[in-house]
Amino acid sequence: MVPGRPHGSGRAAIVVDDLASTNPWHPRAIEERGTAEATWQDTVSRASERQRRAVEELDIQPGDRVLELGCGHGVAASLVCDKLGPGGHLTAIDRSPKMIEAASSRNAEHVAAGRATFLCTTFEEANFGDQRFDKVFGIHFPPADRHDPAGTRARVRQLLAINGIVRWF
Ligand SMILES: C[S@@+](CC[C@H](N)C(=O)[O-])C[C@H]1O[C@@H](n2cnc3c(N)ncnc32)[C@H](O)[C@@H]1O
Image 1 (cartoon, rainbow, N blue to C red):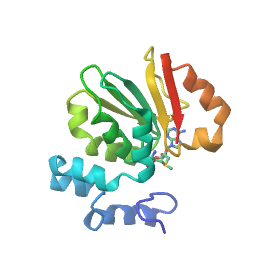
Image 2: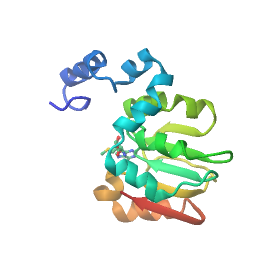
Image 3: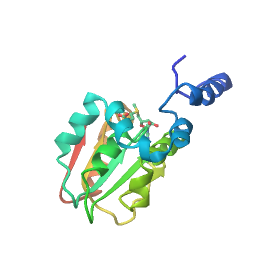
Image 4: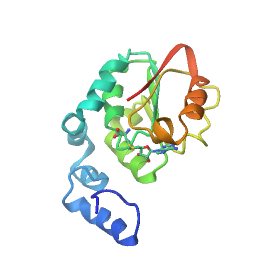
């Protein structure tokens, strides 16, 4: 059984809930010890080398409008938001309610400051209205990696602002 993965049987879902007492990154555990402590230290220690490298490579500028696809727990989202300034904004989506709950909790300060929005939706069903983004990225995002690379990449291009860029990690 993979800890933290609520897929499969009902038993797995119960195990996920139980993890709140043993897993410091479980959304409820984070909530219980407070978002202030949970933010920077948790982000630094949880960020994988790939996530850190990805955000470095994105070269986020303070005013960037950024879209992250398949944000998971919101670890890379935190690193992005820390680089944003006035006018900058991150929209992050994930199809999993649990992931969006965890990402929103981890980034509560950024959400409250109006720097970040976390949406529970599939990319295929997402409606971004007339928003256009300077930087769009995904880290291990299955639709771009393997489910529908051509369709996903074509759709992403339509969301780009002038001089906008896309990066897959
Ligand atoms: C392998 S995880 C990577 C999570 C995160 N990017 C990271 O690096 O830790 C893939 C994530 O993409 C989400 N996902 C998969 N297909 C999706 C889709 N069609 N639309 C939105 N999110 C999706 C999953 O729920 C999962 O959280």
